Length: 146
Image (cartoon, rainbow, N blue to C red; front, top):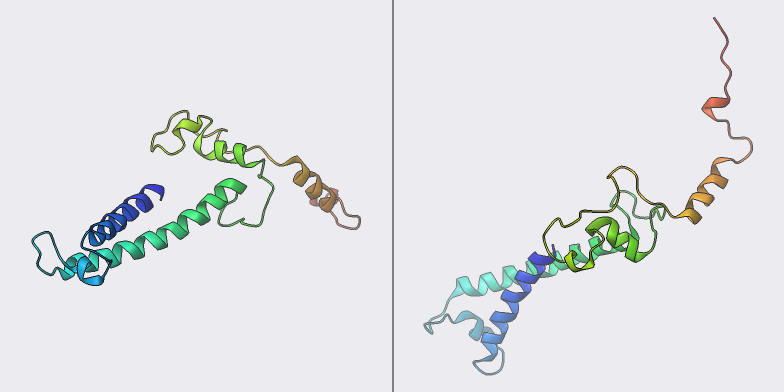
């Protein structure tokens, strides 16, 4: 997502800066191609790319929030796996901070893919909830031999 936003914003900014080269920014500067003739396709590409940049920037923001709090889209209110922003980012992108923005595997994410570090304060709260009096556990049920 980061690179899609980067590429889209690059095109939008390059088009806007080229439009500013013709004086104050106006829509006609966005319609003129390099030969000086009108180009509706160029304007439509600008509108499409601007819309794409805004939409994907929103997705990037939501996913960065998920990474910083170690959440998923299904469990967005759960803080069980939130172990601090640095360890959260390391669990997704790996321990080497220099490789976080590069599209390479590097050392890979921390963990084995099944077991992840947990927030111990949250685990204590879950234990208190699970041992409330009056709640029967499946293991407490006795079966008769039949």
